[in-house]
Image (cartoon, rainbow, N blue to C red):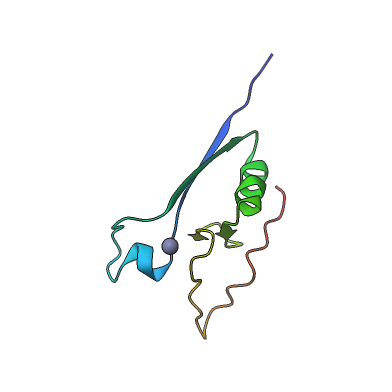
Length: 81
Ligand SMILES: [Zn+2]
């Protein structure tokens, strides 16, 4: 038997959490455990987390997602795989 375990740690990338510098000050944090990225991402989304398609950014429930002109921050659609 193999018990696969995939842990996803989410740190909010919103401006308030991240601050003006690149170092995290006190970001909202979330931990999700499942069998795959897709599963943990799905659970996170159910809790209200927003995750960018490229998996580079996450935003805590209720936190502001910054809008940029040169970048489409689409509504954090997560695809399986
Ligand atoms: Zn935040």
